[in-house]
Length: 338
Image 1: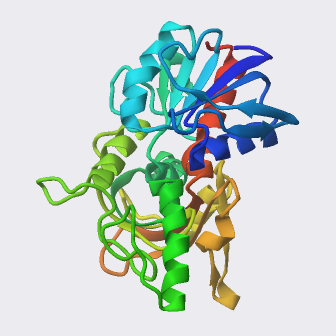
Image 2: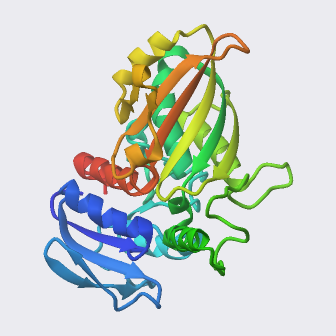
Image 3: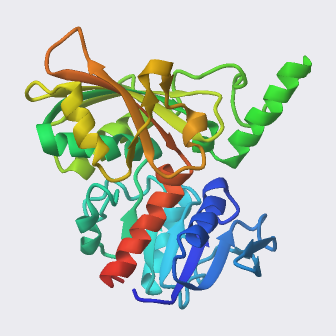
């Protein structure tokens, strides 16, 4: 890929699709031509981009003629059906769904962690799960510096992870609750406003939900280290668009909080965000609309040796999805990999 790239966005009208447009514009990605694709019910809608009014087209097998880069954010089934057609037409696909993440032939890329893996693509590059991305951005430099033995993570995931409809349902149900009115939910099976779910995806036979297993397997693949023991508990909380995570990290040897802070302060994509004197720590509101993963509250685990606790927040629509995808596209453009 070089300057002047024909970009297609599959899922252009969704929450991540809209964020992709914003990130492409903000980062001045060299878009020569832009094709917006979505389902039949969204076809015909008009979207503004860089002074142009573009019409959304229905996604189909023949949507990718002349396209160099296809950014997919329309769900796993859609990616499995249409991404191969994009590749056959000569495009490189950056896919935001779970469809290809664990395919051994498909790179799973976080540019701050494993940028070199994009060069091995065979037409498709996978964007990791949003919670996985948030975790590996600070975990990777700590693993390289000290060796991570085990990670236990609890996530507090925003409505944006379930899409634009989930965000709207949270807004509407919150208004209804405050007004003392009944509300008929369309997406969630139980009350979401002023509530949380101790699982945020389908439950598996082993008692873990799909999201939790994604974090385990994807982290090991991205870090290229199956020896790291990982356990996750994924929770959906009534926050609009930023995920939070509490990590308990066991290292091979003793690591002080000061040593970890030193590594993280120089890590790409990471920002230390805290003021101990004011008891001020990173919150979802602090990171919403911002690129970096905010970290803080590093402390020794007083229950066992060689272990630190860490808190992080990350904008799910940005670093957890759209920003990471565009960063991958930037790697492709810079490397001339198409």
